[in-house]
Length: 242
Image (cartoon, rainbow, N blue to C red; front, side, top):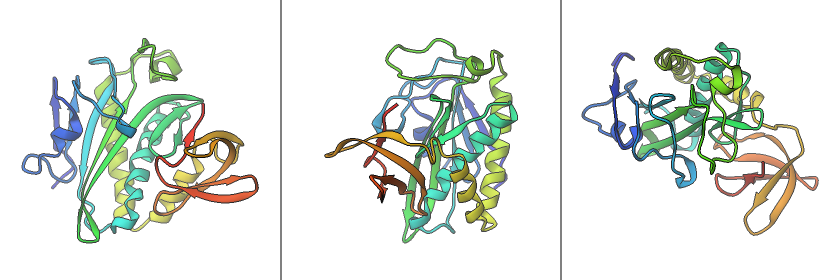
């Protein structure tokens, strides 16, 4: 189907849950919520967003040509579309592995990606994206939030931001369809938060370490040099200390 199926809801529990309806939404469909009552983030975190001030939506992909072992490319597509969009507004953003988008040391966007498999390939991917657009006051428990408004001092039309991001998602997904996975990986690596810079990490069972990010593998593992040794980590096996 065409990439023109956009649904705007005043309220829903979670756009990822709404977009999981395979009868109503197929490839290219997007579900936007003015307010989420049970928004979700990575690591089972709750996603908080002021109603009407930010962009919270989910987009459906049906990447049936992508092997399950290469599903990380959908993370690259989503993250790069966000950084492309922010760059269009003059905001220099970086990708904090795996799917957070940072400006400096502050989080401006979170992405939650959920996959369904058929055999050895992906059948359906839902990418839930939350961009802080106009919010300037955040809950005290959020450690390091920012928004487009706090970064630039300007306010933005949320649906215009969506239109730009939706277009960039289409472009980046088109690169995936065209077999340009190497280009996606190179662009993702170039924008990795704190790549090549000694940084503090927490590793369960080992505690705090100093490491240097080198990049990611095709399956999404993070490559980090610690005490002169190259190591690789899956999601939840290593965390930034910021």
